Structure formats: structure tokens, C-alpha cells
Image (cartoon, rainbow over all chains, first blue to last red; front, side, top):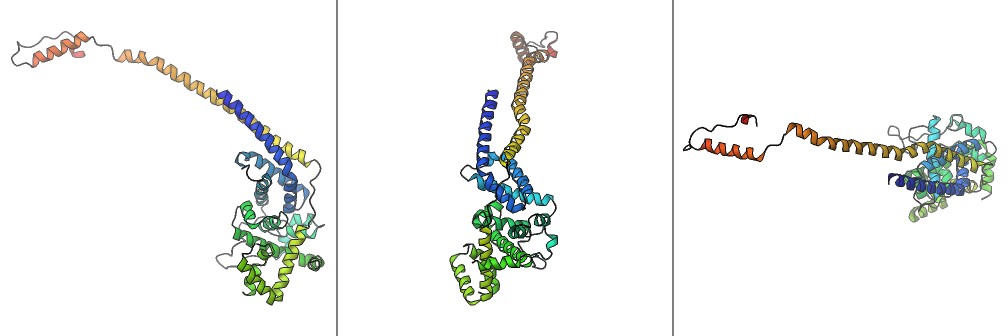
Length: 198
Length: 150
């Protein structure tokens, strides 16, 4: 009987693996685009997506089939990206969303050379927007990318990032302000064209 | 509404995420304030430009590499998964055998510590007790040798 249960378990796992591979085949293109916008280059995007795919496989038993697999994978990918940046020791641990208790001042980026993803900036010089995204703090960048490129609503972004709608609103606003400041400083002509085209 | 309040809400307005009354108040402010209106146009232009970024094509062979990475993960976790049912069955078998062995030993241990007592002896003992307790009885009762040991 024990062996029968073990055999049935193996059959179930095999079906799960086949199901997982089919869903991954359907979703990996969109997930790669998100990974690329978050990391700014092809090599890091592939590493990030691979990390997210393995995590998704490990926790596939927790996946709710009622929800789109692509959204679930995007959530795992965003978390994996935060972990990746933390591992590199480039992510500040102080909250940038809320004013500090002491001074009530929220730090803004003043020195672009000390950015969290300076390497990403240097690797993406061909695209002002992609370069500008690299200049934005990772939490803000993720929120802006999910809103503007993935087309998610705030509620959806909040679920994906595991935070509140209010925090999402704040992150998007600050992210866009950082992005605009960077573009105005580095690519003023590009910003002028962007506004003229409206 | 002042400029500070309005500017904090411009991104949400651009995204269509501001509740009706709040959106109305910000729009009224934009009609009166050219500086905030310019900021709103800039943020809207940024959002539109982001939405027009070209699609990112995955590199050649990415699908195969991803599936291969997932299969490596499967292989890495397989030995543990296959051994688990076998190990559980082995532990269960050992436990069953040990239990059976323990039960088989139980009668031998009991026979050494508590030898059976004949029913006739129990009757004799009770009668001797009653006779010794009777103040009008014939006198002391002589018990069989070894009685006190029981």
C-alpha cells in the first residue's frame, strides 16, 4: 500500500512537472521582458528569470490555478530581483517610502554615480529610458515598470510587491520624479521631444 | 488645493487611480496653476513613452535553457523524494517486528514472577483464618509448612 501511494505520488508529480513546463513555455517571453526592464541587460535578465523559474517550480504546489500563471511568475520575479540586489549589497535597508522619524526627510538621489545599479546604467546607454530606469531606486523602478510597461493597476502592483496601495502610489510618484530628473540632466533633448509629442 | 498637495497626486491622476472627487480637485488646480499643469504633462509624457518602449525579444535558446534549469532542479530533488517512501516503509517494518518480538516475550516474564496458585489452597487459607478469629473456637490452627511465604 505504501508503495502504491508512493507510485501515485510520482504520477501526480510527473503531471505537475508537465503542467509547469507548459505554463512556463507560455509565459517566459513576457517574464523575460519584465526581467530585462528591471535589470537593464540581457545577461542579468536571463539569470533573474532562471532564478524565478526555479523558485516557481519549487513552490508550484502553492500556485492557485485560478490565477494567471504569468502574474504569479511576475511576483516571484520581482521578489527574486529584490533578493538579487540585496545580495549585491546595493540596496539600502532604510525605508524610502516613509519620512524618517527624526527629520521627516526622504532622501532623493543627488549623485548619480552612487546609484544602486550603476553597472546597469553603464550597460544600457543605447536607450535613455532604460538608462533612466537604472537610475531609479529598485523598489520605485519595479513599481513604475509594473504600472507603465506591464500595465498593472495599483491594486495588482500592491499584491505583486506585497505592499499597500498607498505605498505603491508613493513609489510610482517618487520613481517617476527620479526618472524625470535623471533624463532632464542627462538627456534634455529627449525630454523636450517627449513633451512635444503629446 | 495647494501645489504641494496637487503634485503628490499627479502620478495617480495620470494613471487614472485617483478617486472621483480628488481627481476633480486636482484638475481644478491644474486649470489655475501652469507650473503644476506642466508637471502633469511631463509625467503623462513619461508614462506614454514608457508604454511605447519596444518589445524585448528573448535571446535565442532561452526557452530550452530555462527548461533545462528546471529539469536540473527536478533531478537534484529526485533522490530524496524517491528514498522517502522506501525509508518510511523500512522504519515501519522495523517498528512492527520489534513490537511483535516484545509481545512474544511477555508470557515468559510473567510466569517467572507470578506462579499460579491452586484454588484448593486458597480455600484452606480462608478457612484457617476464620477458625483462628473465632473466640469460641477449639484453639490455634496449625497451618501447612510454607504457608507464610505465599
